[in-house]
Image 1 (spheres, helix red, strand yellow):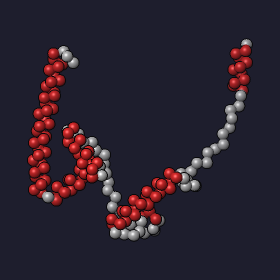
Image 2: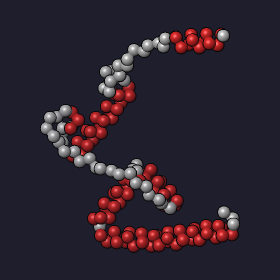
Image 3: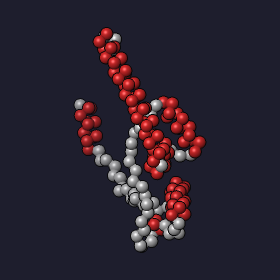
Image 4: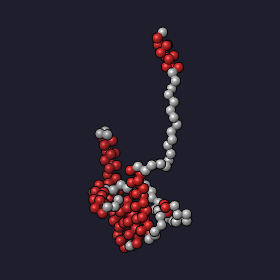
Length: 151
């Protein structure tokens, strides 16, 4: 049978061999992306050094340990009212900061100014009560729809 013959030929056929890869984790030649990344890293480090008032970079291979104050950040999600989010995005775009950094700065400012912190806390408590009432209304509407069979 010709089918068996074709199957035998396929089974006996040798697979081509491939030479092992010689990839390494460190690039041997600098391409445009690598040099751009290194330039960006060097620029960021020099900015950090200027802000700290030092001339040495911990990335330059200095043998003595240097403590660099790198903040530990966490990922978090904030639910905001649509109008507040829109206004905050506009403000952040105009000032060139992210919402997260803006929130951090606002908190740090308020932590140092207790009167303003109390005023903000009072507004926050009022907004919390308003959100709770809105959530209760949404729940009631959902229950009403389920009971009437619309859901």
